[in-house]
Image 1: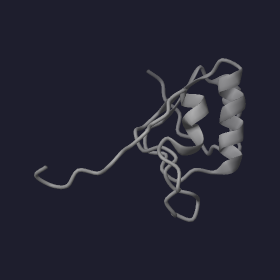
Image 2 (image 1 turned 90 degrees about the vertical axis):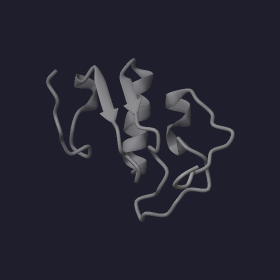
Image 3 (image 1 turned 180 degrees about the horizontal axis):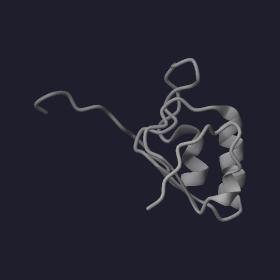
Image 4 (image 1 turned 120 degrees about the vertical axis):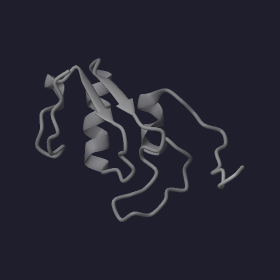
Length: 87
């Protein structure tokens, strides 16, 4: 499998069949819009379990994961919680 690690701000996303964002916690509004267009045109987006939980300043969102990715991912999480050590 060939993989590219590139700056998202300048890259043409449409030339890729699949984009993987395994640990994309702090999201960028501009990239979200570009990814929405990419997915709408048939591109495959693979997200990690905590993608989109913080804004660019590192603040947690009031929304549940996957936050701004929920429509692209086609999922809705009703409830989530962290499990502490030994639980």
